[in-house]
Image (cartoon, rainbow, N blue to C red; front, side):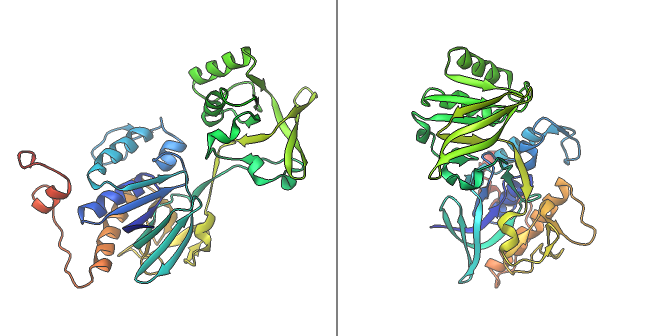
Length: 343
């Protein structure tokens, strides 16, 4: 069990800045995100897209914004739990019990939902027979690479995730069949070149302009995949394990089951504390809704600041919370880890 002041659901820009605002007030955070790297939509959907409306930064990319925010929150040593989805949030005592699909458990005094448009869920494979195949045979993320040792492995997709795992798993798999619906890849050129080299060496078979249409099994254990090629040809491929990387789609996911006041795919909050209908659970960024809401990163930063003060007041109800300025406050300087000659 990990004990903390606040669990933040979502490692996008607003979630990362929430760590900073809470840290300035002396509160410890643990941050959880279903994506394997911090940055949320900025890193997942437009890492190289220029952003022009961050105060004080004329222009930066999504990745650069994420890097700067990670640097900014370093003094607060927030726990970062990536590639895990929050499945349980329930009141417990004066706070909350939080659990992920990876089995991690947290005890927190407050929860902040900064999940953007929701958790990013893998786009599922649609193929005849998939509902009869054991779940462990068809996976959408790699948790234990060693489980593919000596296996006939099929990897579906043409982006960075698919090609990265082709290259990484080729040395241990018996054979890898890569199936991609196009003959052009979205992965970086160096990775594509590495895949081509593995194909030339016979470690990988790349089937392009194709899709998996059917899965065959024995007692739920995957044995073969039927691959349809655009020219009308059909191939039968021996497969023990399958990894599917069709990208991610935003969905509200388990958040919809937490008993909050849901407004379509957003969460209603007040504009004083950015608290949801459940006391102690807050929502900031694109996932919240209130009169006049604008889905801008800078608005999410504002919401994070006010939510932090509200959480501090909730945790210390008998203490008056004063606004202190990072320019002059020795307390803030100490929390930021500044030395005297840096003040």
